[in-house]
Figure 1 (cartoon, helix red, strand yellow):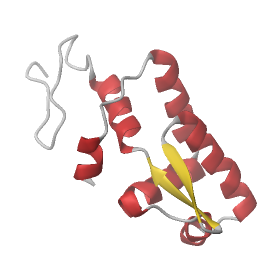
Figure 2 (cartoon, one colour):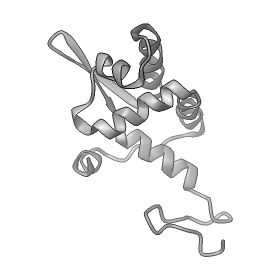
Figure 3 (tube, helix red, strand yellow):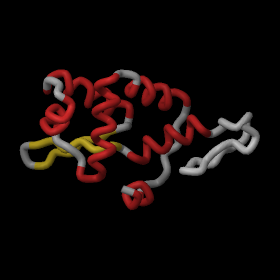
Figure 4 (cartoon, one colour):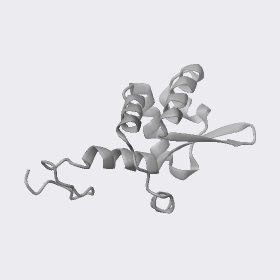
Length: 120
């Protein structure tokens, strides 16, 4: 997954794009679908595989995948007769960056396993 993240130029989100991405994740089934795509990594998943994993109807899933795609958090690619959905790690990282840009009393924070605020 890291090579996929590093090969794409970093995305920069403005407030409108951040709100759109957060709105897409602010529903349980979409959040679960997005998490399934993140776990699947660069190979992605077909809608059928996602529906089976989540135990939801394909028609409901179609709506949720459309919302994730419109927010930029997921992309789809036709592969033969199937669509393959993938998490957009660049957009996900840009959203995390937007949310943590000024998290430490107005100062920049490091994002990572040992991240924290020096003043917190």
